[in-house]
Length: 115
Image 1 (spheres, rainbow, N blue to C red):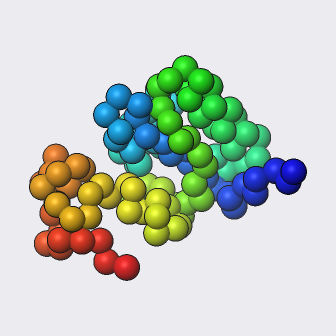
Image 2: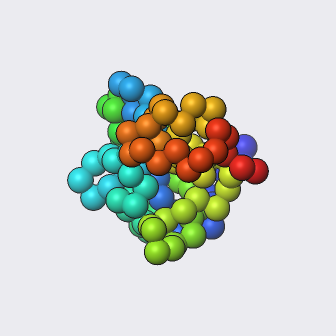
């Protein structure tokens, strides 16, 4: 059986909090819902360490579905390269009064995430 292919570097570790289902990112001090605080792995050794932390946290029932996501580094922190992960970082796309948008007041004037 072939090993899963690792995404290109740099990467961050994304997961869902086991208690509330919130999308979270691995940080130096634990987990955060803010992608700007995510630890960024720029080499294979750091990516291996992040992946191992994700597995350990899943085994401790802290998070579910932890996996590495390739990102682009920008002025506003790491931004996922792929649409699925970008959508996950934004929160619900139908009701902008819920999730991350509702907490921050950033409705962005749209009722959905543009494709």
